[in-house]
Image 1 (cartoon, rainbow, N blue to C red):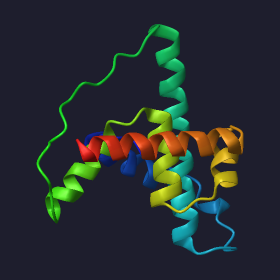
Image 2: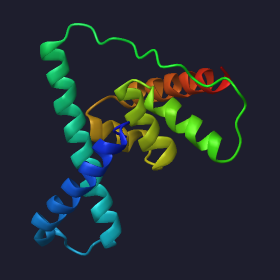
Image 3: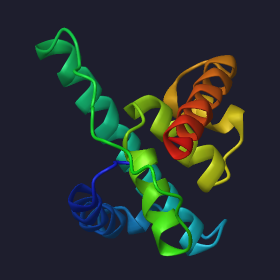
Length: 139
């Protein structure tokens, strides 16, 4: 969801620290792993909101990432690397929606509630993310 391995590793630490701090709020109504996953997703979404707010405050236009996409057909590990690279090139909002829906399995309504957007907006972002991924992977 963050699009950067170093940021993801740092976020894992933050998630476990937050989970430790909030361990008293775990009521046992769900599996501990489910609760921990929710803590992680909420923390990441909050960080993405803060980053988006900072970007809009200080930068008028976000430059397009023009990193080249490999053109050779890939298989196995190479295909996974190509997919990871293509997902990382998605705009932050589209990447978040794609990961939450297609990888984590959240429903459109759940994602809409998490992000504070309309379900139709989530569907549109997901469609655009998939279309952009197909373009990247077909190139």
